[in-house]
Amino acid sequence: YESLIKNVIPIINKPSQILNLKTITTYTEISSGSFFVPNDLHISKEGELKINPGVILYFASGKGIISYGKLTLAGEADNLIIITGNHWANISIFGESSKNSMIVNTIIEGGNSNIETPTYGETFKSWNNSSFGGNLYSENSHLILKNCIIFNGHADNGGGIFIYNSFINFENVLVFNNSAVKRTGGIEIWSPMYNSGKPSRIKNSFIVKNKGFLVGGISIDNGTIILDNLE
Image 1 (cartoon, rainbow, N blue to C red):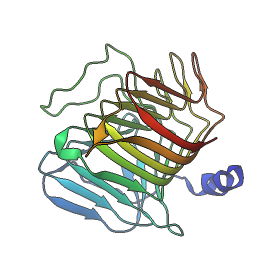
Image 2 (image 1 turned 120 degrees about the vertical axis):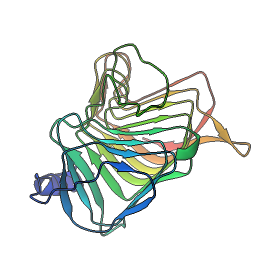
Image 3 (image 1 turned 60 degrees about the vertical axis):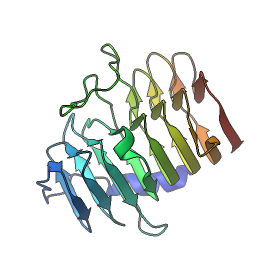
Image 4 (image 1 turned 30 degrees about the vertical axis):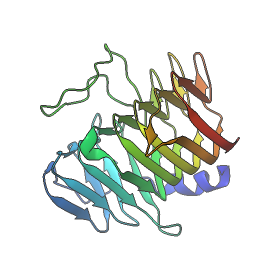
């Protein structure tokens, strides 16, 4: 995995093409290309965003994806999606309408969360001036994550990924070199949920070389989750 990351880092540069897309209220696809994204990509409850193989999104400082609707990142094994930026925020997924969001064959790199995520009129948990989920945050949702690399994220809590009150199904995920200054460096999970009677699960995944003030790799509070073949 370290050699794979070394091959990826040189292609993560700020693209010259600008993606002028802000609020998404209907089905929308980003089909191809490398883009600098100067604004948040806000997906409303009624909206749906699909990002196709090979797309690179490079976010401006403090910006990211804020999804209240369905989000699909559909990369391929030989044509990955890359989400990164210059001190960018993260991917945040919220609520009932975002359930069945899926991130596949994707690299998410260098996120820094947000102390105050823009709500766009929605109301979700207030975290009292702490940042959660350096690269990826999920709250009251269902999220599938497969064949992904989550690295170089930073937050107060959950430097790589923070999950709150959500059902998750993670498989073949590398969570690498993330950091947190208050709690867990890699993956922090609070109140994992069931879906159709099945508990949340993380399978065949690597959680390595993460650093946290209390826990380096993974922490789970107040719930049940199946951990199957983790390193």
